[in-house]
Amino acid sequence: MLGELRQQKLVDLLMTKKSVRISELREMFDVSEETIRRDLKKLESDGVLKRTHGGAILAEEVHVVPPFSQRSQQQLREKMALADKAAALVGERATVMLDSGSTTLEIARRLAGRHVTVITNDLTIAMELSGSLHVQLIVLGGSQQKGTCTLVGPECEETIQRYHVDFVFLGTGGISVKQGLTTSSSAEAIVKRAMMAAGREVYCVADRSKFGRAALVSYAKPEEITGILTNPSVDAEWVQPLLERGTNIVYADA
Image (cartoon, rainbow, N blue to C red; front, side, top):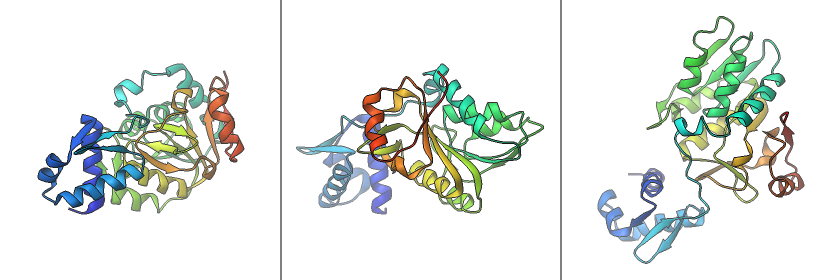
């Protein structure tokens, strides 16, 4: 098994169990103890875990992203305001790429009656727009990420590279000055980077609960994108350092 794949599986296990033992990892992956220790050292340097005597624990600052069914009900009013603002940026006949997520689903609902092209890797968004008489829907290929409605993988990434769109709207599991924009898996991070390259304007949509915390994998520096679309109620403690680094913050209506 390739080191990167082994480390991703190790992280998935850690996200579930919160702690792991070297002995169980050695047996699970059928590799030497030295190899496991190298993996743990690499993941510790990435900020994912902290090594302990004989194993490792999930780093305290790493935020575990809850399942979609739970996320879709959290900060719903704020997400709806973000979706209103995002949809207002999109003109008729525009091309839009929507990342997977509960806030991007709300954006899709607002675009359903518009003459736009929507490209997405989210099966829930695809189903939401499949009945629209106005939207030209394009669903990206790929493999379903276990337990989600998100398509990821090489096929998805290669397909994204064919497109050049007016707007990209990305979700995030957390935003911090140190880790930047983060998500729950390396597979999602790679897809998000590909989407960034495809967009003329790229926005991360994030309600106030996403600030000051980090999900598992960093995928971009905030200043790399057009802007972060958020709510006016977000704490200035988190916003000011981002502004000082050149990040564009776009506020939705209160």
